[in-house]
Each structure stands twice: as C-alpha cells, then as structure tokens.
Length: 189
Image (cartoon, rainbow, N blue to C red):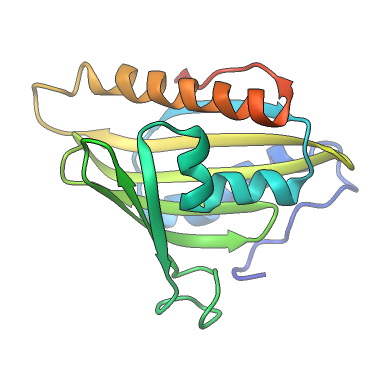
C-alpha cells in the first residue's frame, strides 16, 4: 500500500462507500477543494485485476475510451521506484485535446487510485479523479469513478461538462460490452 489509508476490507457492510468517503476526505481534499461534478458506479463481469488494468493503463484505456489513443507512465516520482505508485505520472494522448497529464496522489493496486488531471485545452482547473473498485465475487467488480474540478473561462464552461460526461458514458458503455456487466452512466452532481 502506498498511502496512509487502509485498503478495502470485506468485513465492513459497504467497504467501497466507506473507502470512497475516506479517500475524498483524506486524499482529494488535500489537493483540491473543487466540488464533485460527476460520479458513476458500474458493475463489470470481471475480476478487480482485469478492471483495474482497463481503467489505469493508457494502452488499455485506448481500447474502450475513444478520446484516448494511447499513453505512457513515468515512474520517476513514484513512492515505489520503477513501478506504479503514488507519484507516478501517467500521460494519456488524446484525439484533438492534447495530452492529459495525470499524477497519482494515491495508488492501491486493484482497489483504488486518486489522481490529478491537467490539460491546457480543458476549461477546468483543480481537477482530481477518484477510482474505487470493490470485488463483488470472483468475476464481478463494482467500479466507482468520481470527477472533481472547477470550471474556468466563459465559452466552454457551459458545454464542456456535458461533452465530457457524454464521452465518458460512450467509453464506459464500450467497456461494459467488452467485459460484460450492468449498463450504467456517469451523472452530473
């Protein structure tokens, strides 16, 4: 484990909800006071290792999220030198929006990550995202994804949130078709 938060435990009634609240309070709020703008919870017919790889590896993300065409990791700042961990930088190359420069603030393989997102073309600042995975069985995983950010500028600030939500929902629908599971959507908060 790479931070001071206890990993999900199956002994609590609803561990992913508890961990999500705690990740927000202890990690997200350390880096941004931006409000929660989007959230979604998805159930996939795959184990946590498969889902975690799909949502964290840029090459795998490119297989289901049409905006992303690939990317890379830079582990130089990782708390686990040479491997993924808090401090790892992930760059996702996009189609038409430049690079998403992301740094993991928290990384607990297979269970959760919190990361900062920077992109000069997006009309947002103070952007952080949280991903929590909860095993529901040997081949079933609940994936919760939240987006926190402040809007900037005038022109795109009214259009961008719905565009981003639409792109994310198209991608997540593709991932649901690939892995199997229950259809769901990211929703505005």
